[in-house]
Image (tube, rainbow, N blue to C red; front, side):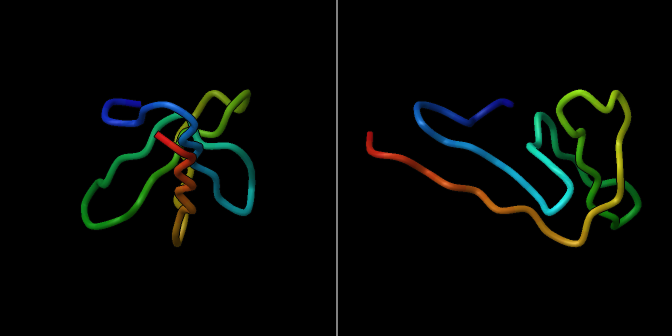
Length: 50
């Protein structure tokens, strides 16, 4: 994902996120291995040491 660097990971309750976007006010996540965008309430961004 653009802007994600180093030991940063992004996840949500249904799996690891490989892409995130907002469409018509709704947050959509592309989940690793699932192949399509899913609506999500929130995501967790974990940033490791730089």
